[in-house]
Image (cartoon, rainbow, N blue to C red; front, side, top):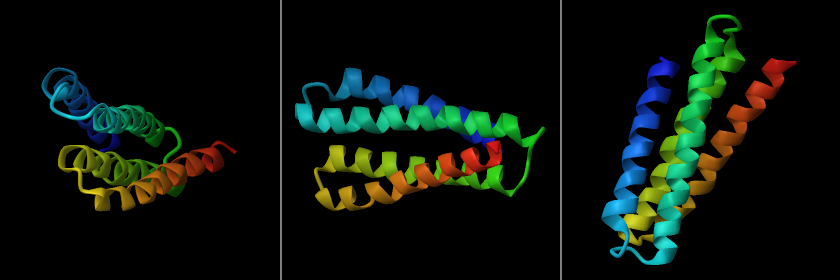
Length: 117
């Protein structure tokens, strides 16, 4: 499941990055374009993390690895998703969701750290 989610998220990240580079340049302010690009960057980092979790499930498995995968998935939706919406709509309320997604990313990495021990 996490391999599939990571691959799908990576695919979408590349597509959204290309969309930003070719379709949004000139339509968004430089600040909002930077916000969009930050969303893409974090989505790609955590797509790779999801792939890692998927590969770790067979040899290690366990609650911590599974929790890390779900935390990364939630983080992508909340962190990157809220930044995409902020950049595209200019609605600053979406920015309030971003730290929750960042916290989910931290939970995922903490789970991997603990599982590593």
